[in-house]
Image (spheres, rainbow, N blue to C red):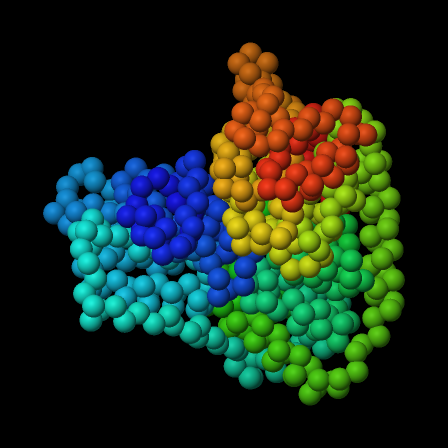
Length: 526
């Protein structure tokens, strides 16, 4: 359980042998719980306890981020005494969280704890993901739960799958298309359906594009993988998303966002999601497949075999075309990926991360801003959850607490986040949380002294008032918080620093690599 700083549950769970991990800010505790959920299957989720009033107020940003990205977390804020609920300026989570949670209720009496928890866990396990909140009023926390009410039973997830007729129609349209694309969202990962996705791609001979939250749903070394994208993507993905005549979106809300690929041109659109509100929300959907993504894929696979047979399609020509596009695209970017510039070029840093890490045994994420758009198309995601893509609301500083949560859920994995110096200012103190707790992570910080998202922007403000300029010896800051700080100023030092970080993390030591980098402008990837 993550927490900060005061809540009766913290001491209570500690007495039961459950370890509470205290963060430096409520938002960080929420985001770490989010990271636990994002790197686990749907039946496991992060739990966070925070204090009432100011603590609950501070947590709103992290809860909003989880809500936007459909991530299930259980949030347990403290509450005031019942006779103070209507007294201003007392803060009520029940009143103020309504529009950023999947479900929320307050516990007013100790005898209601079991029933409220049952409803909360059901909401976390069933249907679309999102934050679930139980506000713990002070009256309930000060009293004992009567023995007759200590009868909680954890509910089993209730799963749904699309109607058989809708599956038949979807498969008929898929098999009739001349140039279809499978669009894989976060729901593929949450429902543990990556093998079924690969099986469908190979059976029908269809290329796969992964959204940013869905990145790692398909091994990007697979010959049918087009790669993934945020607002920017690979050249192959851009070509097929533009030229396809049908998209089968799996586990995706198809939300229109600056941080995702648009649906280009008129085409047949089939959407699978477990949230009915997402169908026809932003796009005109021809066939809606409402239900769990894994169950949906299993039904589609059976229907494809019934309509066309079990022999996989010959996709050798398609695979060759995708390989050709990938090769040409990487050749265009090779000068930057292998750049010898100093201060270091961002893409050389990403290339070194790709080359040094054992991708199957690592978890990597980006932070918001320029690092996101630079790394998403180029880092090779392999196994499920080996990359965590995020960001419809793109909170700066998410990468550090997210990776701490990922490490809590996956202690045997090497956990790395790439962030800028601007993002560090939002959550940098949680480097101390990682060092103190022993959940050792590595942060690669691009130290270019400015907000790289706006190179050349606001020239008067930049020149006269230093807007977007910043400074810091981040390796020294990390050392002051109990972590190991490494400074990289030359290309030759980058790979050894990453290797050293892997060794230090294995020994339980958190690492920050302060990379002196240049101000790389954002470029199109297709």
